[in-house]
Length: 278
Image 1 (cartoon, rainbow, N blue to C red):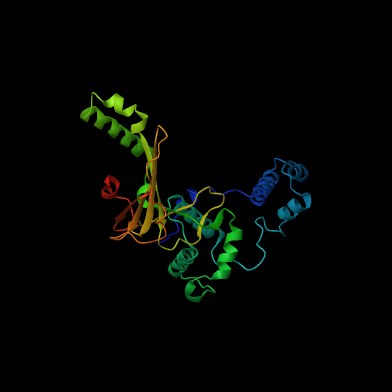
Image 2: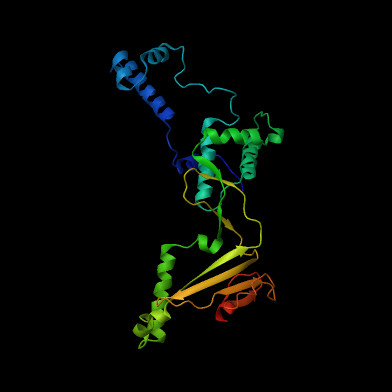
């Protein structure tokens, strides 16, 4: 994927203001009040909670209004890094969070386009840059995501409501006289859910907003897995669970002692209409 520095990417992301940045804003306001003649130096320092000596130094000129960072200057400017943070969090919100290598590739892409001199080999930052980037931006965390199939990632409230409306329309059309009896019988109302156990490697850690309750990563639904579907009806009855294997035949995986289950196979181990009708 390509990354170009668009300011709106940064605007889409809500960046938590630290106490340090708030202090800078208060200092700037105090300086403005003094230079505009609206307040005395003593009153401005007291009103905005700034040390009077620091305010006097900044007004006199020996101390820059914007403080300099301690340590080596970063390759990307603060504004560029904030835009990168917005890009990282925006991708995480839609289910495509960046891995560490993908982030380093994006930075390399930016530097290759810009043409500036960098200490990085082939303009690609390494482990030390990444280690320093996270503390500079506490709004980004490095964590392990949960896999989320593409179909489930695009489910909306409107789609769920449309499904129920479709069921109601179907019963009105096909079983108008028995509609109320069928829909009000708890033995005929089932809730079923399937859990997949992927046979592929789980994803590694990715970058996401700090404090995000859930971090998902959209994955391909073509990967093979073993599926287990359990169900029960509104009356509290539990039918036998169904276990689906990938391939053309059921393999011996130590479940011989579970005769109550129903077994089936599909090409990739996912539930399909044929297995469900069995």
